[in-house]
Length: 311
Image (cartoon, rainbow, N blue to C red; front, side):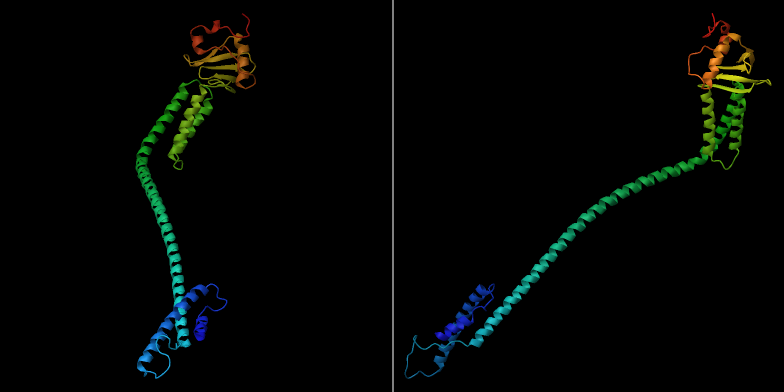
């Protein structure tokens, strides 16, 4: 019994191994029981083969033969090695599980990126389709550019001719400036280095300038058309063109019906002086009553009351 207790204590966990002590203790007890059973079997088999003793105690109370300690150590070492192999296998399983989780996360991220790329690709495809439609529209417009040029050039020539005839038939104010503008337009139309669009813009600018003359008041010094006299000219839109001599004695207006200059009474002198100052930005705007060709032709101009004149 003493030797059996020593063997049982020897099978216990090594000192200092606190974590593996319970499991190894249970393992050692199980192995001790197995070894004890094996010892009993070996002992019984040895009794069957040996001759029956002539003396001494027999039966259950016979002497117990303890197992071989070396065999116990081998069994214990094999079990420890198996546990270590199981621990390594479990660690490998854990590593494979972590790797599988990481691969799953990457797979999900790849699916999200693929979905985003597909949506972006669909949007780009729609943009390309829209650009192709715009390109086709531009090409169609370019095909019509030649026809447009063939029609625009004669139109501009006609517009310049009409403008020149209008200036000659209009009230003769700023004739030099307006005729020079028409001459510049004709020269621009004959230049090959000027784009058609620029030519058309210049023609429209000339028409806009002529239109502005009808809405403005202007005064300038020039030679009286048809004479060699230098006078002050007052332009009231296109309604009236009035002149005043430099010494202020002679007054007159352009008679559209007679296509000539007609004199004005001296009582308009004060009103015209105010009108000249307003046109030259030398006085604030105010209401003025001026003679017009229509009123003069109707015989009313001489009867119009003039602001500031004596009754």
